[in-house]
Image (tube, rainbow, N blue to C red; front, side, top):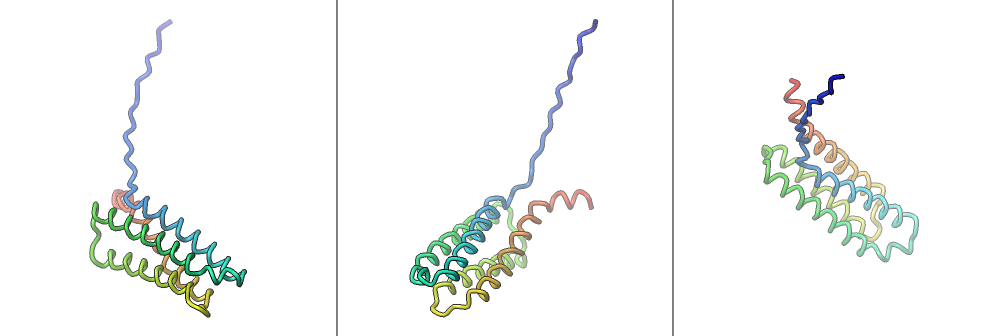
Length: 137
């Protein structure tokens, strides 16, 4: 009986994860914002701790911004796309800062945050899928 010889197959797969760190940090920020908003909205006693909550969220937002800058430095985008990311991050930071204001409209701030953060996450995912889309075009 002849011995079977297996041919080794090498698969070289290089996924495009150019914005993965930014996406992970943005999702962490989105989750933390949602939890903070729920606490601030449901427990009036939490309002006195709003400054600490805002500081922590702003730290997370700064981490997202730093991660984006590092990733964008490796593969720069055109000015309009970079401006979109920067504008979204600025809106996110303003919504966070608003949480600390007395009498803040939490629903409006949540809406502003989500209208900036959620499309930004989808945009970043699209950047990772971009080369695959170019190959199929």
